[in-house]
Image 1 (cartoon, rainbow, N blue to C red):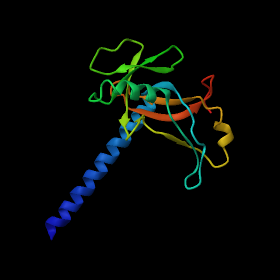
Image 2: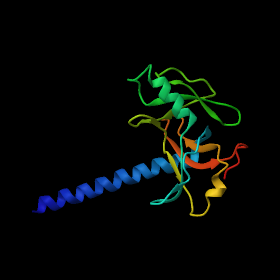
Image 3: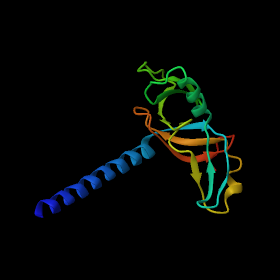
Length: 162
């Protein structure tokens, strides 16, 4: 009986440590990550069950998905070329090749029939859908070493955050 309590306590401590480490990693990316803009195509601005949100699809994700047809067994990293304004465009699937100064890695997930970047939706306060109608880019904070990306906001065609 005493061993069961110890195992439960150790399990709870392990869960707390892993959770806190994950939060620390995400906060670190938000604080010191590289900002990039990825072109998006909004899909549907409303959900009756979840409130207001914008379903997102990214041009980069479509390009990655197309490239994966040639390289289905590749790792889940892609190379983006980032221009002077911070806009990232798909360059190649990553195969441990050296990156140029204007290139970064982005991690992606493979869903059933599509590629997903860090998220595929952006939630906002109810009644603010009109504010986000002009969204043209997702603004991400990116860990350039691991490729982990966090969507932080949306931006218009002039890269002004909405």
